[in-house]
Amino acid sequence: MWVVVQAQDAESAEMALMELGFPVTRLPSYGGFLGRRNATLLVALHSSRRQTVLDALHETCRQRVEYIAVPLESAPLPLPTPTPITIGGATIFEMEIEHYEEL
Picture 1 (cartoon, rainbow, N blue to C red):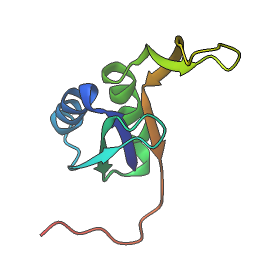
Picture 2: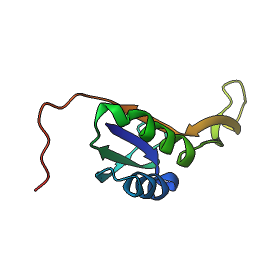
Picture 3: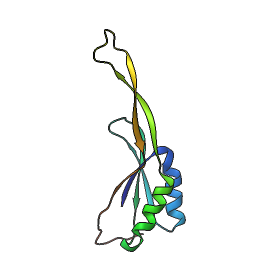
Picture 4: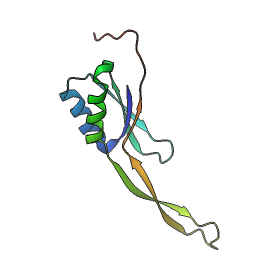
């Protein structure tokens, strides 16, 4: 499972998964739209424990509302107007692995 979380939630998500006994590898990443710092967590798990991981991520990764400055198109001067956007949470990608080994 690949899990992309905001930098603010990365530490708590990683610790929660490790406390549950899941091997986690953390990679730094950046969001494409806002260019914010993220973390990509690689989590190895058996399919029977999928819901446990999803529950842990739901508890540790939350969505937030932030404001970005967007220039008004009809204004004579490029005055930025704050626009609310929802960021955060967790973006989860699942894939089946034929072979997994920890050395």
